[in-house]
Image 1: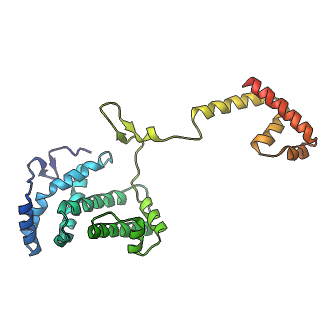
Image 2 (image 1 turned 180 degrees about the horizontal axis):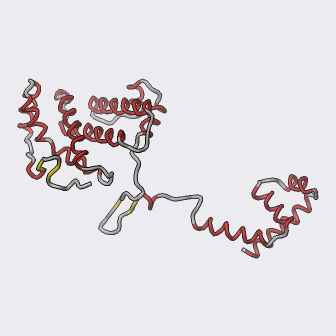
Length: 257
């Protein structure tokens, strides 16, 4: 995604204005009185916020123009819902709104489908989170969000997890001048690493060197988890014989390994 290009959606980003706090207050006062021209000027004066947010969504394979347009929708929603009586900076309120709008767009256009009911629950939870954040000037807990939407916290957690964006194994998570560290570098397979693969080969080769009775005893004991008494009953010999044959087989295995 080329987010560093100068022109996005026909907007020359190198010439975007920076509004002073005084200008913002004057324009917002006019917006509250229904001045549409002031609203347009306020939107244009805050497009740098949208640009800064879409930088966070690199490597998603989305076109910068599309994300910019969606971010602008979030910006306009922030302007229309901003309450100056809460004594919160507009950017503090607007950035989460812009991020939320972009995330909704990415989720709705995701190839991994999530049921409508789960998405609805997740959206309600996200809206509740935005409201509570604005009211209390801090991020709410899952319990507080669940109480706000009137649902068990387990349902809220499940719904929010279901709409999480998938992450590419080749997405860089850290880079400090040298080679990047990717997500796949932090993923570990506990079942199929090289040591277990080699051990499996050695055990299979070792088993081939035993006679049929020794193979059967070791298979019943260590692969099926049976006791020596159970093995003795199954193959029709005494427990003492099973114990002796097992020790002999293991001795042969250790010698080979």
